[in-house]
Image 1: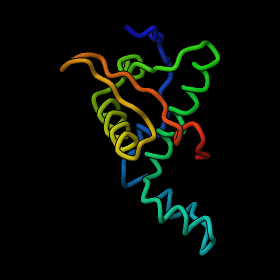
Image 2: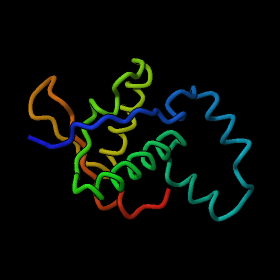
Image 3: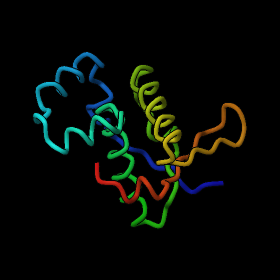
Length: 125
């Protein structure tokens, strides 16, 4: 069906950070009262959602060089813990809800395929 059977041997660190650690890092790294701060607050995105979006954007860019436009979720999650896999799955659903990725699954329990949407390709995270 799709010619996307490649393996991603690394896991971005953002999937291993707990939510309370993310909140602490955001508090320490947020600039005070700038326009950028207001824009980030208005988006309602967590730092993990932004990190997953950037990660997927980078993977889609790399695969586009080889003429591939689809990422298989199974390949993204090879060797990951249940916690990491569930976080990646959740953030993918968040991005789907906001129309940054297109998600396809032919039937229950089949592989989930991801395609970039224009918003993802053109965004700067």
